[in-house]
Image (cartoon, rainbow, N blue to C red; front, side, top):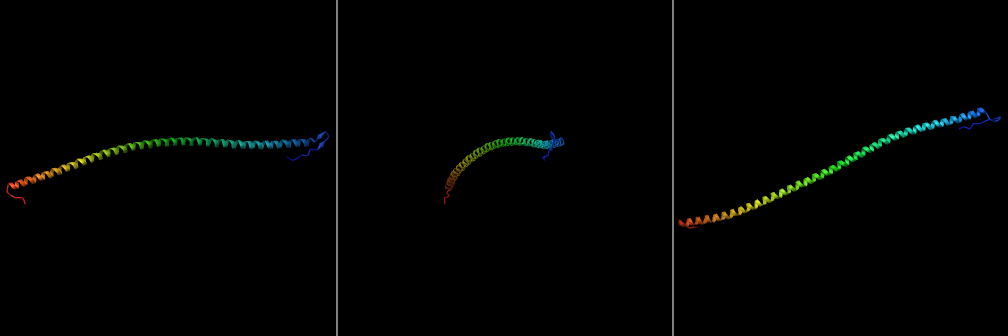
Length: 148
């Protein structure tokens, strides 16, 4: 604030100078008060904006947490489902393998029986041929035809 020169008079200072000085002080304090109020209003507006932004961010965090929880539940559910599918696939695979092994054993046993039947048929056919030859030889010797 500019320095005011207070002029002296009899019994003190000049009344107009003191009045002007007081008015200048009042004006200065009113200006400072107005400036402080404006700064306070600006700070209040900034605070309200920050509070609104903070509320938006808290809501966003809450939604992200809900999404995270939802995704976590979905992942856990998918893991369980995958485990169930794998267990079911193993069971079906084991059943298929057991069935294939049983069928292979059955086919092998059937092949063994067929091989045995073929051996028996060969032995029977060889014996039948020998009997046939013997009978034919006997027939020919009875007729007087020599074997050559």
